Image (cartoon, helix red, strand yellow):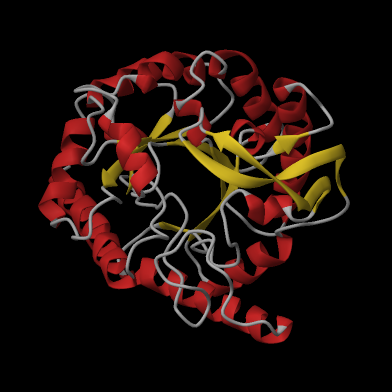
Amino acid sequence: MLKTTITGSLPKPAWLAEPETLWAPWAADDPARLEEAKHDAVRLAIRDQEEAGIDIVTDGEQSRQHFVHGILEKIEGIDFEKKTRIGIRDDRYDADCPTVVSELKRSGPIHAEEVAFARAQTDHALKFTMPGPMTIVDTLADEHYGDRPKMAMAFAEILNQEARELVAAGVDNIQFDEPAFNVYLDAVPTWGVEALNRAVEGLDCTTAVHICYGYGIEANLQWKATLGDVWDQYEAILPALSESDIDQVSLEFAGSRVPLEVIRLLDGKKDVLVGAIDVTTLTAEAPEEVAQVIRAAMEFTSPERIFPCTNCGMVPLPRAVSRGKLKALGAGAALVRAEL
């Protein structure tokens, strides 16, 4: 009960990539040295989680430069040399994005070796994260499909193929990251959920969708400042997700203006990964602060449905801060567990 987990990413060591930086270039050019560095970083990320009392661990996304493009680099039909500057997340910020130039195809396994390596490093339950269809579509330029729902379904098919192989490689939980769900509210109940359902179809593992308000980067902080005293985006999308095929929904609460009562909109049908760690601050929470968020969430769903979690990925944070937040998450959950 109250099993802890993280949304996915952890800071990368300086010997792997530039610290505290999104899209950080790799520190090693030699492929063999880079592979060794990735493996060492995965081992360390898993150990940090285990020592902090995290129950469901991830590889910290140490082998990927970016949570979206890590999988896209190995999908045919995407031209990474043809970058197009587009506004993403409804023009929240501009980015130079690869371009879809032909039919999308997955020619073989993408992350199976990463999962197999991580599986061999831990006896804990293992979670692996991938971007969801809507967020992928929102992070690419398109010169082929001309239709976002159609392209999302093409990616959903690919994600499902990949996820099936990751389950065979030993993963226990697969989480699809959908920050775009918090932006394109009208599309979520229609093609957003449809594509998500296709991505998880037939998977023999626990499935989750992560929806948050983003990393603690300046563009996201500025966007949050425009959202008013109450952040009500979840109210528009959780009813549809309550009827989806997903097992778990990961939501941001700590340090945010999201009212915890939105959990009721899931109608007790889904597990809730309760964001109890604020990833926008440079100070680790006290365990009691984490415990307070968990206790408050228990007013709106049963403790069996709650999985204490981080709000978002922690890749932009200093490593010492991230480790402190991991320990606070584990200790805070232990406090509440002892009260039950």
